[in-house]
Amino acid sequence: MATGRRGRASSTVLPSVPLQMLLYLSGTYFALYFLATVLMTIYKSQALSYPHDYLVLDLTLLFLMGILEAIRLYLGTKGNLTEAKGLLATSLVLTAAGSLLSMYFLLWQTVVLWADLVLSATLLALHGLEAVLQVVAIATFVS
Image 1 (cartoon, rainbow, N blue to C red):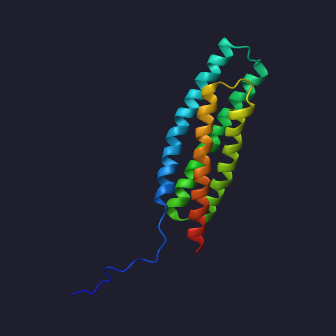
Image 2: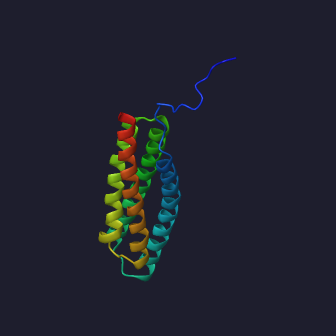
Image 3: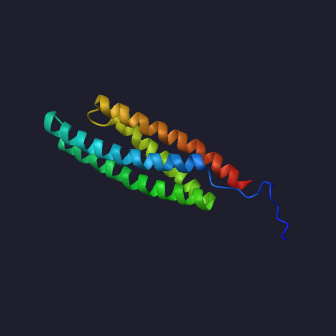
C-alpha cells in the first residue's frame, strides 16, 4: 500500500482562475466592441459630417487596437496558464496601451455617440479589472 500525502495542501502556485475567466470575457467583448465600432464608424461617415482624414485616423487606431488586443489576450492567457511573470507583465503593459486607445474612443475620437461612450467605458472597466488581477497574479507567481 502506498502512503500518499492526501489532505495536504500543495505549495505550488496555480494560475489565476478569475484572471483567466476575465481574459476570455474580455476577448469575447472586444470582438463585439470591434464590430460595433466599425459599424458605428460606417454610420457616422454616411450620416454625419465626418472628415476623411479623421475617418482614416479613427479606423487605423481601431485596427491597431484590435492587433494589440489579440497580442495582449494571447500573452495574458499564456502567461497566466504557464505562470510566466514576463508574459503577464508584457500583457499588463499592453493592457495600459489598450486602455489609452479605449480612452481615445471614449473621449477624443472625431464624433462620439452615446453608444461609443457605453461600449468604451465598459471596455475600460474590463481593462482596469484585468490590470488589477494581472498585478495580483504576478505578485503571486513571484512569491
